[in-house]
Image (tube, rainbow, N blue to C red; front, side, top):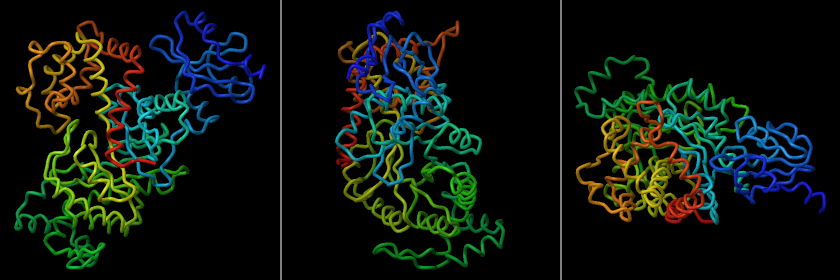
Length: 497
């Protein structure tokens, strides 16, 4: 006991060395033989602190005085932490647990996510980012995983988590994500899905089909034309016209999926989750098309963990589902049966704040599925700004209005800017109500990249420094807001242990 007390982290000593008040995250304190590790905060910065001696002490980069080393929370030290504390390293969802993607655009949300997960059996994907999100926030895959790993260490969370290279379209981006250590690839095949076919008439489909390679078309027709397939208690006939449309729409995407699977997934030395996304289309994925895709993936020996169809209704960013709930449930039943028969889980994209369909997902799927959230964490940060710094909120809101037209190029939303109450008519105490208004939520949701990265004439970030300083000061409040908000998602989804 005396030896342990001698090597414990001493905040007063750290305060003297760093010249700032120290917050010690007690749940992070971990003894590794002769060395004790912990995470601390000093102002806006967090540090990994090691006291004692031994291999982990020696391997960490940092500044040593006596038996205490103060280490930056950088990428190199994260890798050291991973090697000694495996629970801080992302892993695949090998047991196919119900799962949720918790994309953290800011690198500040994971602690709140962990608190929301308490009492559930869900498998979290703490590190989930698309190339678009990385570009808009100026981050990298490595940074996203680093922040998640240190948060896991900070909270003493040992339940396992994943890292998702989300909506990847290019091999170069897939390679970057895998090199960074992601454990899940979400392959977005939208660039090779021919959306133009959805709107073609019968004669136009015939004309387009006749231009295809005859041998390729015959191979498809021999396998599927007018064949009857039974899924659960439903029979589907892949009639000639529907099959031709599916071939025109998806055949290049299927080739792309197979090529990526064979090159990067099938022979991987580490376990990976492979998700196929076909949701970025102009029209919903009907059951016959899903069945055709499932049959082809099986024939091509492509093993997918999850598949994301385009469901009926509107899955817009940051707001609840828009559509007929009864029709959604009927559609979901068909997709669920196909996924179950072919041995993969369904994935629901843009799942943030879709509260009205969560009970339907729980009731209908009756098993493991995956749902993705992301921007709602940013919106909870904006809620915090509205609560704690009204002046900053007003400036960010005004800038969001000025950048909304630019942001719409990246997202499909039906926001009515004119319906948002004017800032001048809103008291400081009422600013938080913007986070309850669908139009204001979408305004703030899709302009996040501009709010974080835009600069003034001198090159200084307009809001980023103030914003992250406030998050550092109000770290506990942000975690509480997230625990409540994501907790509502988890409760309605039935993700209970």
